Structure formats: C-alpha cells, structure tokens
Image (tube, rainbow, N blue to C red):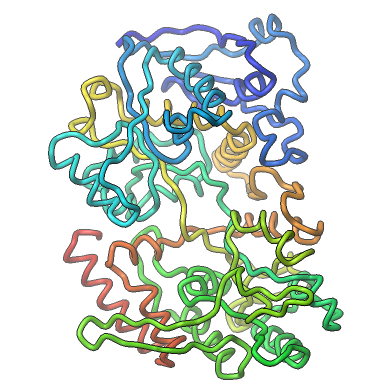
Length: 524
C-alpha cells in the first residue's frame, strides 16, 4: 500500500457534487487535515436537496479551491476490490440501475474509488428473507468469508455479530463524528461501528388537527406539550375531555405496547437497556411509564385489547389491538383512535390521509421530570429514545475478501464515511460539528441535520418541537436485545399493559432473566 500527500482536487461534476465534495474531507488518513464540511444554507434545505445545499453558497472558483484547500492524505490500495452492501450503499445495487439515484451514487462512489485507488463492488446478502439476517451473515462468516467488506445493518446485528466485527474503539476518533453517532455502534465499551442516521428523528405521536377542530377541541396535544402541560395528569385530563367529544368506538389514543415501551420510558429519563448492557426494566421511572398506559386502558382512554392469548409453555403473549396510521381519525371518517405512534418515514403520507396534522411527544411522570414553563424548560431527565438505527460495520480482516484484508479496519470505515458524507453534506456537517464541540469541551445542541425544514409537517410549531427533540436523544438498545432474545423487553411490556401484571414485579423478573442471558452468552 502506498500512501501520499496531495491537495484536494476540485472536481467539476454537478452542483450537487461540488457541494458534497467539500464534505468528503472526514479523514482520508490518520494525520490529514481537511476542510470542514460545507454548512451554507443547511437549515433551509429540504431532505431532497441536502446534497446541493453547500453548492448553493459556494462562491470560490475551482482554481481558487485548488489553491486554498488544505492538504489531504490519500491512500493507494492498488485497485483492490472492496465489497459493499446494504443501507446507504443500496443505490449501488445494479437492480436499481433504472433509478436516477443509481447514476448519482455511482458518481460519488467513483470519487471515493479514485481517492483510495480501490474498486467498489456491490454484493447482496444471499438467503436473507428479512427475518434470518443474522443467520445469513453468519453462514458466510463460518464458511470463511463475510458477504461484504463494508456493510450496513441494524442495531440488533451489532451485538449479535460483535465477535466477528472489527473493533475500532482505539481509532474511531479518526472519523471525527459526535458521540451519539459512535454510541450507536458501541456496546459494553467496545466500538464496532457508527451510524449516519439523523439521531433524534424519533417516534412521536400524530393526530389530525383538522379532525380535532371539527369536533370542537380548541387546544391540540401539541399546544399542551408546547406549554409544558403534558405530564401524566395533564395528559389524562386532556384525553378525558377529548373522549367526551368522540363517537362510540373511537378512542383518544392507541399505541402498540412495543412502540410505547420503545419511547415512553425515555420521557421519564430511562431506557430499556443502555449501551453498557445495564437493564432498566425494574427501575421506578420505567415501571411508571408502563403503568401509565395501563391506566389509560382502565380509564377507557386507550383502545382496548381483544383476544389476549398466552402460551403457557413458552410464555409468549399476543393480542389484537388497533394501532397505527390506518386507524387514525379524519374529518368525516372517525377511526378507532385519534392519536398513534408514527415513524419519520410515515409522516410523508399523513397530509393526504388525515389533512393538516400535528405531533406530540411522549408524556412524563412529574415524579421524575420537572417543567417550570414551556417544553424547553423540561428537566434534563426528559429524554427521547432512538430505538432503531442502521450502523456501518466492517468484519475482522480474516473474514474479508482478499482485496480488503490488507486495508486497515479504520480506513475501511473512512472509505464508507467518505461515501456517506458525499450523499449528505448536512449530515456530514452535523456529525463533525458535534465532534468539534465535544473535543473542545463545549455543549453541542443537536437539532438534527436540517433544522427548520418544514418537510411533511403542517405547522412551524411541529417543526420546532421535532427539532428540539433531537437535543434530548439517547440510544436505547432494548430493540437490539429483544431481537436477539436476550432481554424480553416487548414481552414484559405486553404482560404489564395487555395482561395487567404489576410493572415492578414483572420488570424485576425479566431483568433477572436478561442479566442471566447476557452472562451466559458473553454479552457482559
């Protein structure tokens, strides 16, 4: 491998390429100094225009950029093939060649190839039906070679594959990304990957503003949260008034227990499982969040469960319940519920189905969270959980193909980072700004990648609150542990909310079982 120093080339591709090129600096070598990612107009861009934001404010000519750009360390890996797969690399799949993004992303990939003198090859994970991803990955590894040299997978894969992944704990700072993006790939003190996800774009509850107006509700749940009046007591009072205006068969709220447990405990300052492997199912703030939804059911404010079934042998529990956007009430079409959980990707279709809509974050127990004014005065104990994310991962050298075996682990991550940064200048800028602030001992207020962007929201009120939620984000590994059948987070929630079990005793039981499973399987 030959390593050399050269100046950044001003590559004139398109306006989007020009804007993103500055953002690719994030570290071609361990001692390089590069320009910070472009940040111009980041707050005003939409998600669809992220890659062009920097270009819009770029005034220098290509020649001037050539003269002033800081030197960047580059590598020469002799044209080695690096296999990539999944996540943000998905557009490189030849099956997507009919999409415009295929050409755009390959243009970006070619820039990275030139920088490192490598050749990208997109590979698919064979035998993966969406439910057997871990087994499919392990099949290749046990046969001597992972399916890709760089791949993107969910949080559950990180902990399940940790023994086969490159440990970059000692070198991850070379990526120069903020702590929340590293925490998403760090388990029990070891860093195996990192995320490019917009941490803080979390689950919220949504409702139709038009519908509430049509039934005479002068105040919205968003108004309540904005005013700092969304404690458990406030929430019950509001939902009780709402219930009085609803037709029979329509309930103020309906959230699946799996979704409630993914988010509601964080509003009390606690997560199901933290990055150090500590299980919090028996903590008082956690138990309180489950007991609260059970109380909503008992008061007739949440849509009831039906057909509850428990398998006496396995302990599995299930029930039927309305939840999700399909049952949301709209003007002239009252559904089974008024509020439900939505993910970021679901927001795009809400305007067409329920009209003007709004969001409301999760309520809190005033015993653990205080609020002295509007929502911005909520105590630091109020958190919002990132429950599911995607990580960039690299298998250990012995499981990589010949071309990538000799490329250092952290350099493979830099290769991935350079590609990721080219796809979103705003994301690159935010990740670097957090890193720089934390390095200097400063407080970085995470407001997401494109704060102030209207997106699919109906009002500026929703935009402001959603941006603010990013500032309170924490990682909850509950989904990962549940998916790996180590800590039965969802089962505990269903027994408490659906079956009426006591949250504290149930939490203690599942915590003990989870601790033992972690010990038996080497998770801590």
